Image (cartoon, rainbow, N blue to C red; front, side, top):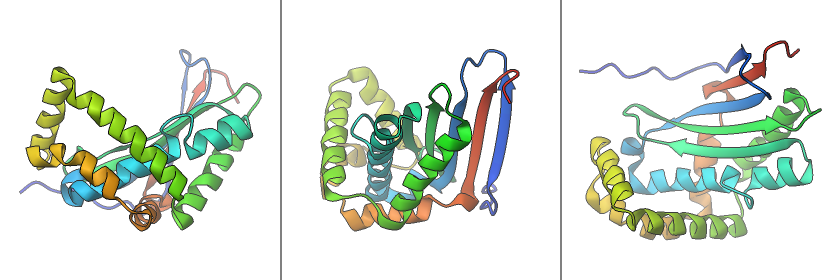
Length: 202
């Protein structure tokens, strides 16, 4: 059969320089379980975690590093479980002028460590549920997106029923489930941090 990708055992860092980059960009990717291995409930739980961390202006990272500390121009998070062996859970951000990548990374790591040890709160869960439910309603209203969503689901071992049950699962996920996903996924040993710097930057 097909060989599976081995589990990572050490944190990795990559620094790239490119003349086309006008500002530094920071990105961290954690290896996460694939949707096919998680089942629909687990997949939804990881989507909720990503949205609560970096899914918009009400997210934990946006409030902390963009609004409160004013370190980042933008920040976001995602979960993608479409690969067969492993999914990926990631965070990306760009520092404001005069802010070093190290300062920004330290602030993000503080938020990630707190989330890994304590999960999210009830208000964050409620906001994220509303946001994801609204997004999926929009998807199901679009023929083109609907075809893509079903195609991806069927290719990765999910069923049409999974896609239709999405909103029901979003509303059923509990705080302990999100906390368990956070403590498992936010693991430095299974991470790659990439930094893109403009040519000539220190």
